[in-house]
Amino acid sequence: MTLRILATGGTFDKHYDELAGKLGFDTSHLPQVIARCRITVPVALQTLTLLDSLEMQDDDRQCVLDACRQASERALIVIHGTDTMRETAEVLGAAKLDKTVILTGAMIPYEIANSDALFNFGFACGVAQMLPAGVYVAMNGQVFVW
Image (spheres, rainbow, N blue to C red):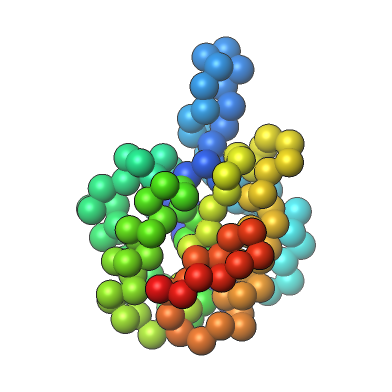
């Protein structure tokens, strides 16, 4: 089984700009996250966008849906901001994809100490291989069904 990882940004992938004193986006942290998790199943990483989920619009959600539909993999993980994760889960759930789609994210950016990003990603990878087709949110050791 290959896991398809779809990056959309969110706090998970934010970078702290020390000069500006702000959080923003540079490149995805997912290559480092995947390496640190030592995942032994094949992984296909695809960056769709790097957005704060408050900036995510309907066309961005359509892009996520299209990527899920086009993926040959049966298990997909969407890295997403927590503020509008529910809205994206509703769009994906309504599509009845016949795939296992896990949305996850982080409350603290990956590169900041005590981030929940690494745990949430590893947790999502595990449940993506175990759950039946459907749309789920997996965060902090809990799974929510959409």
